[in-house]
Image (tube, rainbow, N blue to C red):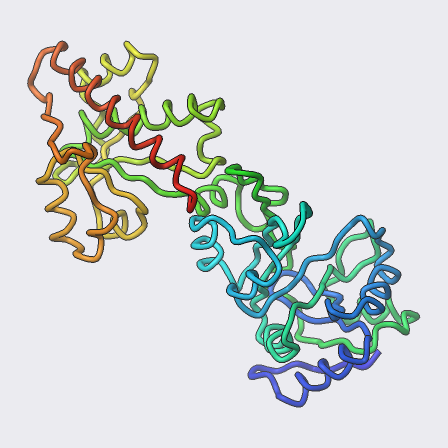
Length: 359
């Protein structure tokens, strides 16, 4: 097994040496930011069979396709929803593998864009994906020490080259997520946690009022409840199904509880907003939201004053363009009327969100 010591920046001759081996149908060991990968040309059936033999993996256990850039997934997989595509564009190159339906047929395919410059340059120059798997025999722990790799696979003549870039930056296998209809399953969290991955790949919906203690907390809670009912799931599963709801206020003190009137109005329809704490609207919240529903025109104007580029995603909760009056200071019957009005409007928006093919 030839050993190449990889420096930064990567030397073109080293990229060419790896390409020569791959094009000859040989296996190579390449660095990534997670763990070292045992690689084969994805367009060479004989090389793929070598990879299975060295790995000790059955044919019904597929390998992950490693890409040079996010746009390359379109050649292999069915187009993912826009929300998932945005997430992949944020985390790639990086330690996330996604399993998507293939472009043709009922099967699925695993895809990743690794962050190591040598490996990405090799894939880009090759012109199509590389199949890579962790460097170990099936059922054993991955090897990340180049010296251990050379020792463990000294008798594997199929591996012609080891690109030694030292210890991987992360040293832990990538996260693995799978899209199943609307639901995003986290099969392996990697360096992340499950909630972080699901929230990152969800459509982020923000409800906005003035103090974030009366109207918008009700809208947030009712949106989560109505989404769960529409999908036939529990409320705590809404995030996994691609929607995350939040609320904020244009003029508030962070950490304020929901108003007593809203707490009681919510409880009457089986919702609990007692743990709610107000959040001041920030430029970061505006930037990160995919949809912003405002309870009045003054709130929409506030957002657009802060960020004119948010106009396309910012609108009144009422599709008719009417304000939902602030119940603050009113009696409980006023809060009930506000809850009913918000519930009806939220129901329309939830239908719209769930019908959106991009989500």
